[in-house]
Image 1 (cartoon, rainbow, N blue to C red):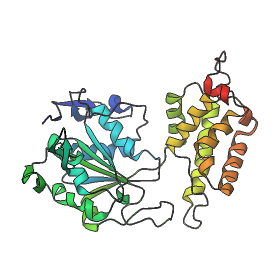
Image 2: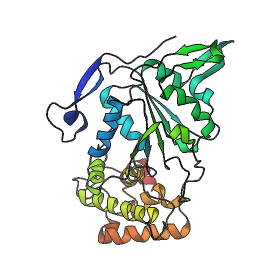
Image 3: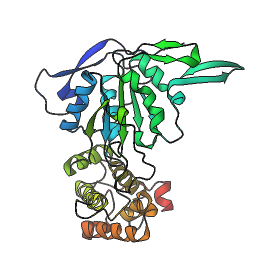
Length: 339
């Protein structure tokens, strides 16, 4: 049985590792080995200081807790941990939850391999054994009775696998459990997230919570600049403004519920920018890309409202080429020509 245990510990300076302002000499523990196949790949990511502080405090010293990250869709809940782990060379096991997910899917089960039945360890067993971070995405989609099977592990007890002859897996000291959800485990009170279930209160009591919201406008503009530098600053800034106007109508406030059910997430914003470049030869690349990013899955009245917001925000730039002002135009690619 091949294992991928975390390597030798190594301190990483917080400021230079995560691109944030931090006191000189402030470091967090990671690992020397960056060849572990379960270490996530590094991608551009803007770490927000408050969220990073809580995440690193948990990774450094969980004190028997799990970490529950709650926030709207596409706000970077999983990416926060995934990209922190990528910079610390910390291996990750990641699972997307759903109603049919069972504890055996996480722990392991016997499967037919080359004509013989072999016990195949699941992501939870691997993480617990080898000191990885286990991320359970959309935890509030899962049946609460199944996930509650991890309660004793969070309490520091060993994982016992009766199906594999009563095997006992002692938790590695670097094992961490992180879950994400659009709700905080009490069910969806907004009606925006179909399929969200109320979770077991005993399970929730074993977590500290971190709230992840959408980025500040200047942070999202900077992120888009690192991902799609061909798009001018003015176009990127207005894309972000459109996204925030749509999110405001999605979230609503204490007095008025949200009037739009399809937000433009940070993930969607990146897709809009990339598609605007791919289809830059279209009569209106910004509108064409926005349609394929979010408008075509929105209700007709919501589609009209979002398109009106975009036109109002961009004004005379609405017909502009996505890469206007970036030097000599490149030859259109196949996608541009088709558009």
